[in-house]
Length: 165
Image (cartoon, rainbow, N blue to C red; front, top):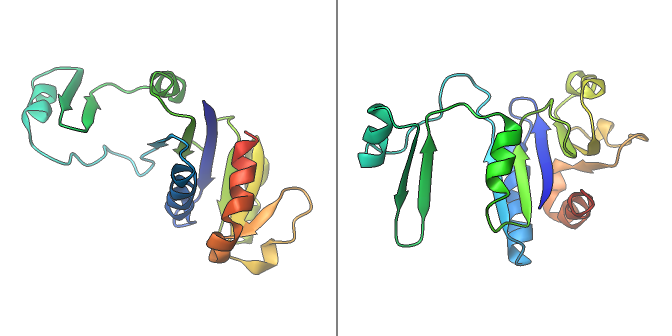
């Protein structure tokens, strides 16, 4: 399973790039899995108040529900990124795209909005490409760069960076 991170600061386009890569790779029949870090503090929203949710509320550490074509698992335990990746490795996926976890050391595409974000690149490891909305930041000699404004035109090149992970 290949792993690639999509990281950036708030409103830098992480979800936009993630969704474009998911659509691109899924259309090529590559099986894609995703993992998003909820970096805003607190807990992710619970989408329903079903029996599986009440099982968690009653003290279960893991609760699952199986539908006709979907299985949903909820864990009431904090897992670090390596444990989550280990869990994903048991699934039939070819590529795991991770949104967030900036400080992890997996190959990553970094999204920057401005020069201030650009100045934080030295804090990150294993950068394979940089995406930006700011045309002035596109001419970088250290890393391949792409314009998020033209994501559709750049998706094949971006996908090639991911394939090399």
